[in-house]
Image 1 (tube, rainbow, N blue to C red):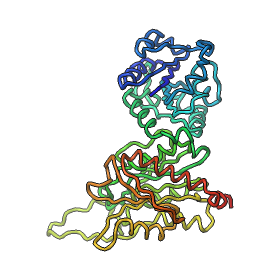
Image 2 (image 1 turned 120 degrees about the vertical axis):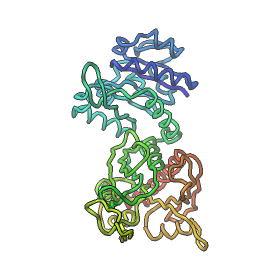
Image 3 (image 1 turned 180 degrees about the horizontal axis):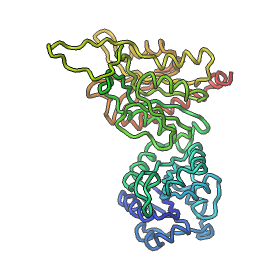
Image 4 (image 1 turned 90 degrees about the vertical axis):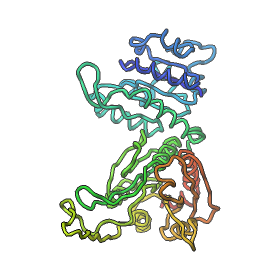
Length: 417
């Protein structure tokens, strides 16, 4: 893979040398493009020695190869680490005072920005707005760590460890594939739910499920790679929310219900990958339920939780500005008379969504695993699409079908009404 590693003028530049080593040891060709200010922290000789490639900073170097355009065009991944507050501002404004600025304007591949700055700079309204602008254009802006900064300062803005950055870069690159090249969701807004919901029984116990949130994260990352602006509504998960999304955290099904109806308003698509609890305790115990001295067991009565998917479809039908394409998930187990797909087809008809992603679940199937097997069913009667493999690949397949649904002329007409 051809990678451009941009380095801007922050003291964290020394850690980018370690990031470069991870990239080259993985067998990738890396062109380091530091800004002139970055060379105050780590010199040209270090970058050339570690990359084995010539290092240039100025637009007018290597003009015979039109270097300021060639680097961005040929790159398969661009990582800017560290990205200072100044570099974020210049990139958001589309400025290109140096070679790195030109690379960012010509690159059509995935771009990962890794901010590092003092807390006040990271939290400043100008920086917040610049980050939102970059994310809306499809760039991935990694959330900085919180910890020790330059001098005695501590807080959010710390440069993440190189291993975390490289893992995110690899995931971004593998997720993107053709989606990043064609950007079929450019200009679209997508809401993705993920993880499991938890229904409180008492202050320390809850009813929940085994969902890890991995599939929802993969869908959100694929949507980002396809150019969408993504809101990620996450419940209980064993993985981090995807960088580059607006993250909304929920716990119960009721909280998820409210978040979906609120944040999906005005969006182009809603993907309900969350594993929603169907039942909750009918009564909440204000104090921890104790073991009875006489050996009797407590009796817990359950009631149904709100049907988030069906309610979203119903609210849209009632005139609320909810997405024209709603994708549901059906985690099913077959029985002696009905198959998983038969249950899925019935659920699709019952819920009224445009697409349903069906998979068979169980103790050692799907939940928490890195691989899965799904079948996508469609309300318009088209042939089902089956996909098996890594959840990243399945996420790309789901987003590909989602983009196709959004591009249907009838769907666009419906959304304009």
